Length: 460
Image 1 (cartoon, rainbow, N blue to C red):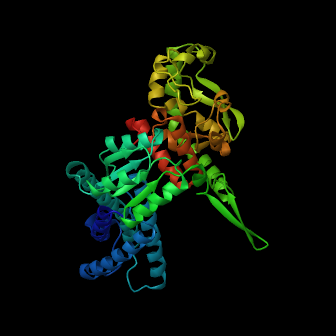
Image 2 (image 1 turned 180 degrees about the vertical axis):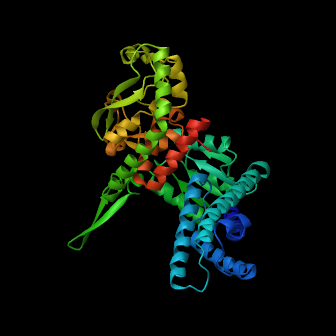
Image 3 (image 1 turned 90 degrees about the vertical axis):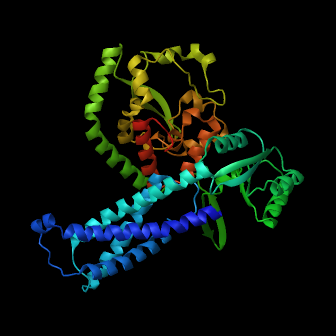
């Protein structure tokens, strides 16, 4: 762990404690306010000093819960949405434990109002405190370079260049690039480590020989330098395994995805429930967009596009954003394809796109009718991008991993700027999602998608 990470995580402990204490006391003050008392008389007798002592002990208990759920783990770039849900989970679990304890012990107090208000205030105040702390840290990183690690990148190719560019462009990454070496040259690495002094080495390509990597790892271990590396294909695959025992012999299965069994059922229930709720709110939006499309150009409101999901072809429903019969003209624009790194087709200022189409595409609302596909079971709310049959025909073997599960209306690659990413990086993001799926990740991606729709950005 970096020293700055440790200091930041330690500083969160008093911040969390203070916010929890303020949340608990705010619930008490609100309960005894004249307006609430008039609506609901107070039946418990708990002086402020005694209540404050009790809140102090409970706040300390919540710090233990926070630690158990990983809220004090080191993480250079933690999504604020992800952290918010961790806070909600931790406070909800801790509050449930307190309620169970109070069920057996009636010598504290019995106020459901205070418990509910403390739960709400706790989530709000702790999230606000952590948001403020994160902003202070970002300011110190950018303005004074406090907590920045000096890194050396080893390796060449697109992956190495992408990591290098990210460090240079992003002042909040927590890294400062010292140098970039194309190969494992221990003599050069030793010189750079000594002057000006590297704190981390990033092995950005996985195609070095085993002996070279072992020598570099030993070198880093001797000098207490952190070594980070990009895994090869098998390393990425083996991150998601299952172990079975057959007659005393261990069998290791490389799972395609953990969206299986109960996970598959939970994801389907989530898709149906969330889609039905969205439909209720989106009916006026659907009517408005339908009117604008018909007013702007000839043709149907919806368009059905052939797509592949789980290796099966289906009709994807979208709002029509192009002129009628646009697919017929795709062949004429092959030379204008901006995606030269793979089988995907993308063209800036595509003449087939209508005026209204440009607007609904920029906000991605043309994809809203895919909710019908979700309800039919063709796709999921979150998953890899639906693939065109002609594109799939050009995929290499490792690209087809993304066909293992249902495609999605949105996904990790989409909210990470898929239109700007090389095709291989898009596939890696989708593979990561498949191998590390959880309902919480789906919720986070949906919230990030909402951010893209509202603010038009993919990182926040």
